[in-house]
Length: 139
Image (cartoon, rainbow, N blue to C red; front, side, top):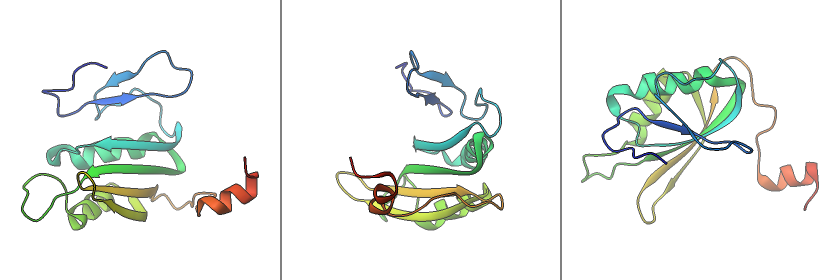
């Protein structure tokens, strides 16, 4: 993995069968529109480019696409990270609908946010893991 220090906009994309990661500008992802059904995004989400970065992820998600964001949460005494209110606002501005929200507190505090594209369509299946297992059969 190339060093990420000094970059505000940095993205790596990895999927099964790929030889190595794709490194690209987070504001200009090298993919066609609506190419991914799902995305896992782990990011510090810089404030200056937050909406633009989120809109680029929205662009490459397919209609009714889902994304899970793992974003550093801010504690009241810290200056870095995101408050829930601030993150909800920027996700809404970027046309994402929050479907689920968890906060992981150990060892650091992180927002774990499941979102869907706000494009008038609904994801085909959202639910608990046991409901999915009952549909596809337990392994």
